[in-house]
Length: 366
Picture (cartoon, rainbow, N blue to C red):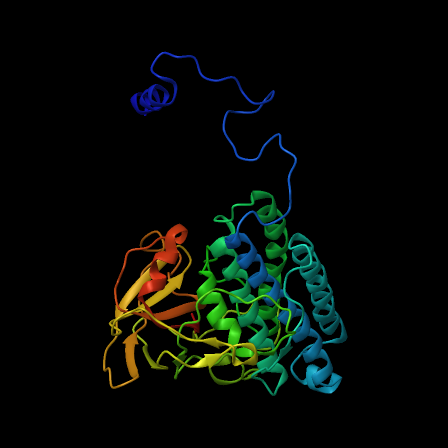
């Protein structure tokens, strides 16, 4: 270790040259954006498009939380195990979204998206809670994926302050659904195109002045046997209790390694998104692999039994840091079809975009 430290010093300071003075008392050399006057604005089109995508996410969450509270009666919420205090927490989360949307709108100087109209895929309170925990999952992960790539470090710092709240919202909805609240060691990030692919189907129409979203829409991927966490079973088979709770340990997991997972997927060229003004596309070749994006890992399994636009694979096992640590596949995570098992890490996940055949889809694992 000593020789390595000397080598680093020599490389940085020209051998015996003295180190540069610290930037301020009690501050080590290095760091970005220190001793500056921050400007909380986008510095590039990449910044604008990333922040505007996040703004669209905040708008739908604001609408969704209000919609669910208005759509279902007190009796329906109580039958699902949610009290008046629980319903107020959902209302407060909607108020948080007002703040998040205002923050990003201000950073975009009023040029960002305005609220749209939306279509939701649920008819019961339990399905509403499940959709909320999935929507907040890809909203959170969509920001994690681009946050450290923003040119504007100041804007990134404020967006981080909002997305940490959204992470807590996702955990709350898991608790409302009777799921273990945080079954992973690390929260994963996904690319903007992956997040936009997941978000676009629920946006019906938007004001004409909304700026166009430039990220790619991939063809849709459907997991035809996705584990279902919505049935409310109290003291049922195997003693499962999926009523709301601070934490719930399932005697029978939703899924486990080796489980056969089946898929169908769409071809490119379908119109999606608000006003049907976006078209799905893919530059990938034929599908060969299933990419499982979770925690710090992108794990591949072979796509098998391919018949037209359907196929299957087996849920992988494995651990983040080796046997006995956190399972790689757990929680609400992301699955895609790819034409390559390209090696990627969390910081360069966008290299996978050209190889996406379809997806992502959210897999209710663990």
